Every structure is written in structure tokens, then in C-alpha cells.
Image (cartoon, rainbow, N blue to C red; front, side, top):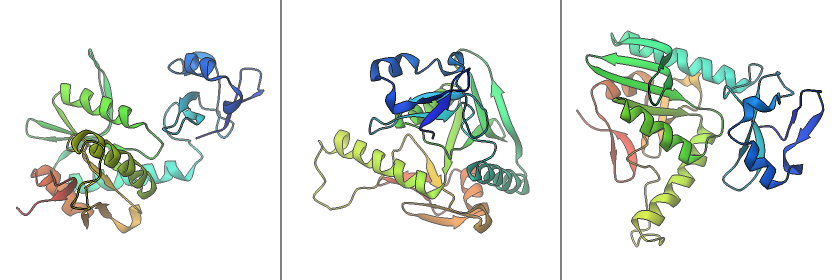
Length: 231
């Protein structure tokens, strides 16, 4: 996330100085604007946060010079290795064209089943998670999201609010507890790739155990959380 980007002449364009009407017209056409990120020179894309903050994001989601990219690469390598240890056919950066094209960080084949694992460190609006999830579903691909802890916790706040609004009429339930996860959005956290542990609202398991649960369909949604069910 960047507060400014550089235009074609190298001059800084501060996000919050741009009128909202102009900003909205820029969104969705970031690659045509010619703006770049000062940190690494990659294409800068105008976006707006849930709280209305205007900011620039990397077009490829990750900055090549940032620690976040290192986390992304480590997470991807660990999951690919764990899946291959389980005998799965597994590939990285797999694209499929069509009416609704997609590109998966990791694509796992288990018989006729295809499983996409998306590793998301950068900010993404909930509607984009759901849009991309629907795109995978329309292609007959199951999709699971792996996030760092801070991103998982931020998303959980948003999805909990969505559940309260849509399932409980905007009022916190009398039971005093509501799971933060959506049944349509399987998501887990990976705090530290070196620890090789997958976590969640009601989940803490070794990475290989979680990968096996994915393959065996034991990773399930129940009572507002994604857990590993007993096989």
C-alpha cells in the first residue's frame, strides 16, 4: 500500500490529494495511467480501502523488494512441498483462459478435482475475495485462501460484520459469540512459514495435517469457523 505513486515524468502523485471523483475514474484503468510505485518501479494501481482511504497498490499484488514478497514465496514453497509429499500433482502460477480467466498461485490436482490455493499478503476488499471465489467456482475449482495473521484478523472483522448484518439482522446474537468466517470463503492464516503451522479462528494444525485435510475434504465450515473435522 502506497500513499503516492510516480507519474510518467517521475513526479509524485499523492493519493489523498486526488479528488474522489477523479480517483474513481482512475480505478480499474491503473495500467493505462502509467503510474509506478516508488519502491520498485512496478505498475501502481489506484484503490480505495474499506474506510475510504485512497491508496496505490502493486499491480502484481507484491513488491519485489518487500518482506511481504519473501513471506509469499516461502509460504508457496512450503505448501507446494507439503502437497507433493502427499503425492499430489501440484503446479505454481497456473493460468486458465476463457469467459472468466483466472491465475492460481498453486493448483493441486487430486483425481478429477482441482484445488486452487491463493496466498494473499496484500490488502484486498471482501468483494474481490468473493468475486474471485465465484470465478473459481464457475470453473469447477475449489479455492482456499492463505493469509498472514494481520491480514486474516482484518478480514475476519469484516466477514463477522457481514454475518451479523445478513444472518442476525444487524444485531449481535444473544449467545454472545459469532464465528467470523463465511461458508463461501475458506480462509486460514500462516503466521510464520518457518513454524509450518496453519491457524484460524478455531484452528491450529501442522501444515501437512491441514494439507491432508484439504485433500480428504476434512477442512470444513461449521458454526462460523473453518476447522479440520475428525476423519
